[in-house]
Image (cartoon, rainbow, N blue to C red; front, side, top):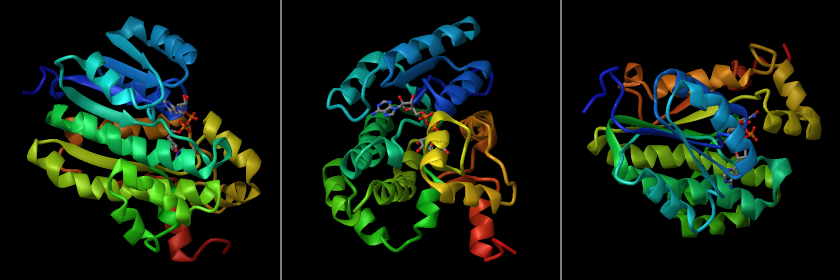
Length: 273
Ligand SMILES: NC(=O)c1ccc[n+]([C@@H]2O[C@H](COP(=O)([O-])OP(=O)(O)OC[C@H]3O[C@@H](n4cnc5c(N)ncnc54)[C@H](O)[C@@H]3O)[C@@H](O)[C@H]2O)c1
């Protein structure tokens, strides 16, 4: 049943809500009138974010590791009998933050478990938006077969064989999110729900800044893009909020690039001209 403002029923669950694009998404979804359940590993920053947003409406928090065995149960307990009207899943680790195993576990295995946990609770008209990355586009389809085969959380560890460094693990994990969304679209659709991945370019957040500092090639990518600048977190969060709204009612099972044209320029072969 639709809410009086046209929103689906239920809570908006936002992971990675203590920083960057998760925090910006929480702000925009709060402004759109959604009751919020904000999740993050960093309990201190999460509490600060929630406090800032509370003036606008109902805000609950769930601090914890999304890759922890207890997380799906804690999420279910926090939701109680309420449906999920929107999921914006931002929590992840970038290449400078962890080793390949942990990156695959947090970015892909935990994402699968999260999707399993919310799927039966998705309200009619609801949407799940999973943050992926341009890294998943850059790697192309070369490893799609093994990535598709690793379609359960326990099977994700098998991808370590292809991830000789954290950068590769990150790209594989994000390609895995693109493929997960394609696989899940039918099941979500049967519930009248949608699932989409969103691939940001290089964004001005703590993660984006850390990667820029560590890898000179990223500045080259920014400079060669159609819009040669970093985006603000809000420019991406606005797309996530749109994807959760009734205005996006026919978008599902696909990836949405929000990258200032980085991948388009790359694929056109026009970079550097
Ligand atoms: N910033 C970029 O340039 C960029 C580019 C492409 C894709 N992305 C993707 O966008 C999403 C958001 O990135 P951001 O730049 O806002 O990141 P960020 O580092 O600013 O914020 C990520 C948040 O996730 C939380 N988190 C990390 N691991 C967690 C875990 N195991 N359990 C619970 N919470 C955890 C962190 O505490 C942090 O608050 C990520 O999925 C990232 O991979 C970012």
